[in-house]
Length: 286
Image 1 (cartoon, helix red, strand yellow):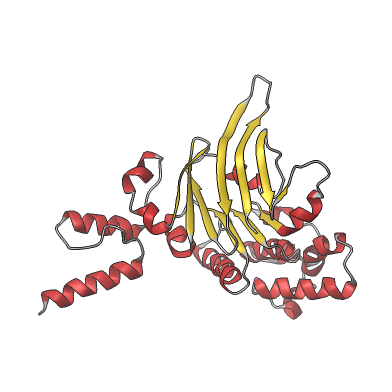
Image 2 (cartoon, helix red, strand yellow; image 1 turned 120 degrees about the horizontal axis):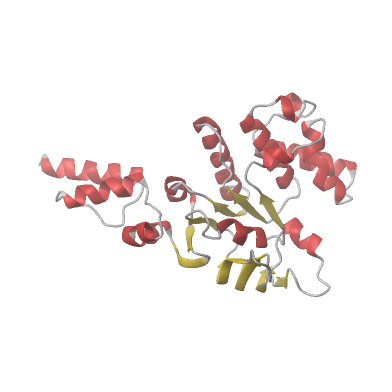
């Protein structure tokens, strides 16, 4: 079943001189099996929105339903719901604290009261998901690892809870290109092969173009568009109006169309652009 957001509003410091409404009247549904990218300029409400999806924030108004259950309903077991919805913050490696990698990843499952055997199984499986060899890394201190490896350990700690939904807030922030590619490839594998529903906040339109099955565009605390990447990136003027761009391939395609080349107006990936330019080259050589 999906995650449903109904009439969600969140106001920080309500009733004080510092009152600020971050999101208002947001309605959306995250369907099972989707890879959703949430985009928007700084301050658009992206992080506030996703922190509601596992109950980290309580709505000022509205509801969050996970598998049909109101996360903030009276008598609801919020802990059980949070086990279904894993949340990875920006810079999650700052939350590592155990003396070994294995112990840090095991922290969540251990608090669930699982057996030693089940905890070990989950730790090994989570480490495999993030491409960290158990025999090589399990007994090492997480603080001896590279920044990208530390982030993978932190993500493995969330995966060890075996969530049905994985929420990630800028998971590649601060990483070098190699570290970014590894993290994004790992998330893509989890979605494709592991069947995990993914919601990812991102500033990279190219990453969204490559990974997302749907995009949610936010501006000034509201959802202004929700559609496939192809449909979103075809609206370059709308994206520009909310302070966002489109992928490099879409920008180049638009410039080439303005020069008179016969290219589709909804092209947005490098692979598509390459194929279309090859087509034009072959037609010109006839």
